[in-house]
Structures are given as structure tokens and as C-alpha cells.
Length: 265
Image (tube, rainbow, N blue to C red; front, side):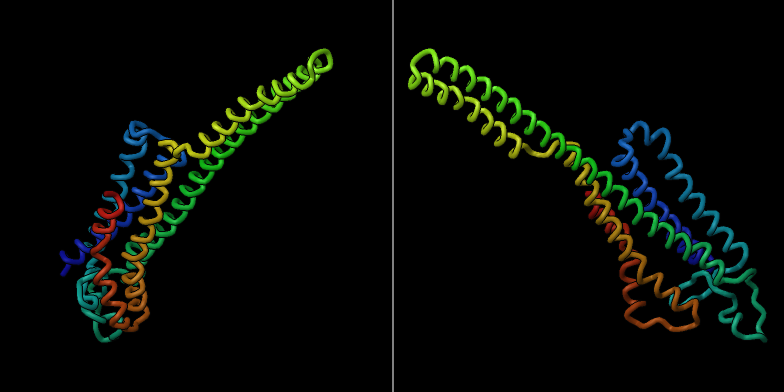
């Protein structure tokens, strides 16, 4: 039972912190525009060391303090013998309060990683949105600058045509002036069509792809742990969770790896 509980604890702690590590990686790429070389040299070692160290240290601590025991349908952080904390005539061999240990090594890490992932997702979206606004402002400024240049050129042509019309044939020069403005109008129309039909840049496509993956990642994380966390909170309060909650917890808790495959491939 202790070995099963140990494997369960290090699996859950390692997976939630590795999920947070992936979110931090996306944040470094999108918001801080870090290259792969920078991430590998400065960030990635900590993204591996902390999840592994925390998971194994937590699992070993719970094992040596004898806080693994039968809990529902599996071995988990629980008093040993079963329900010894509820019977004053039975002495518990586990050290410490199992409910406190559950919060320290399960409830708090899962909750922290979930809310941290949401915050990171918002930061990624804000970075993508700001980049999109800058690109649109650049495109709009280019179009307005071209319009102003074409308008000034048109005014110069009109003034020159007026002087020539006063001194020479008015009808001929008027026709020439209209014909002279047509190339500017054609150029402006072609430029507007080009700007409106330009495909998004590679950076914009990449930013949008990362934003969508971050959103899908957060949804997958929520589906993986929300039912299991609800089940454990119910259990800590001394109540029996409904069968539907237990069933959904058993279905979704092993699916985080599948969600990651669907998101990243």
C-alpha cells in the first residue's frame, strides 16, 4: 500500500508541476520573446529540477512518516490503521495530521499550478493581443501615410494644371489633369487591396497558435483534476462523494498525457 501511495503521489506532483513548466515555457516564448537557446540555458533546467525534486521529496517524506494508507478504492495519504483518527481507542501509527499533509502535498500544489496556469494564459493572451494591435497600427499608419502622399501629389498636379489652363487651352489641360490623377487612384486602390489581402506574418501565426494551445492546455488541466480534487475535498470533510464524482475522477485523472498529445501534435 505504501508503494502504491508513493507512486501515486510522485505521479500527481510531478505531472502538475511539469504542466506548470510547460505554461512557463509558453510565457517565455510569447511574452518575453526568448529564443530556444536562451530558454535551454537559463530556464529549462529549473523547469525539470523543481518538479522532480518536489515530487520525490514529498513522496519520500510521506512514506517515512507512515502517512500512506487505504483511502477509498486506492492507497493514498490517509491515517493508518484505517479511520484510527476517528476511534479514540485505536492509536494511529502515522505521524502528523494526514489532512494537513494532503493539503501540503496535494491540495495546495494542484490548486497553485491551476491558478498559476490561468494567470500565465491571460499573460500570453495579452501579449498576443498587444502584438496584433501593434501590427494593425503599423498597417493603418502605412495606409494613411500613402493616402496623404497621394493627396498632396494630387493637389500639386491640380495647381500646375490650373496655371497652365489660365495661359493655354483650358479644355485640353483639364482633360490632361483628370488623366494624370488616374494613375494615383489606381496605385492607391492596388495598395489598399494588397494591404487588406496580406496574409498574417509568421510571427502572428505562431503567436495565435501558442495562444490556442495555452487555452486548450488550461481546459485539459481543469478536466483532469477538478473531479479528483472535488472527490478528495469531500473525503477530507468526512463525507462520501457521489458515485458520479468518483467515476469522473477515475476517468479523467489518467488522461492528462492524452490531452497533452492532442494539444502538442
